[in-house]
Image (spheres, rainbow, N blue to C red):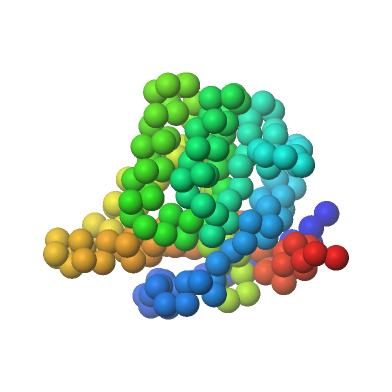
Length: 203
């Protein structure tokens, strides 16, 4: 079982902290897929969810649902194709990825379109698990209904109270900042990074 360090009292200052994570150095803060899988395993263990790790995709199966995990550098269009296939094949789908997987606002809109199509075509609800990192910790936030993610991001951007021109000029960074705030202001789980990275390191 993964050693977990849960820090419910850990808080990230709202002003300034998110800007420090954007956009320079984003490549250095990427979360690889193998690390993401360990984070999701830790989440399932804590929630006592019986998820079965698969040797081939999807990454986990649980109660007729598929869970597919992606890293920061996973190919986006290929991932969408996988998500769409699993939404059709299984009774439900959980998608799990770092916030920077949606590194451009266009990706967020495409993901929202996928969620809407899956709901309309297959009567499936898509759950989303978002992960971010800051200093020595990973932060995880579950969104039970993927279609509300876009609205949450829009509300966060609106609350920035910037002019329309400035908003459009910086829409990519504002999208990333909104996603980070969604995860880090009220995380469902906080994990100590070294414990996860040690588990993910090849022997």
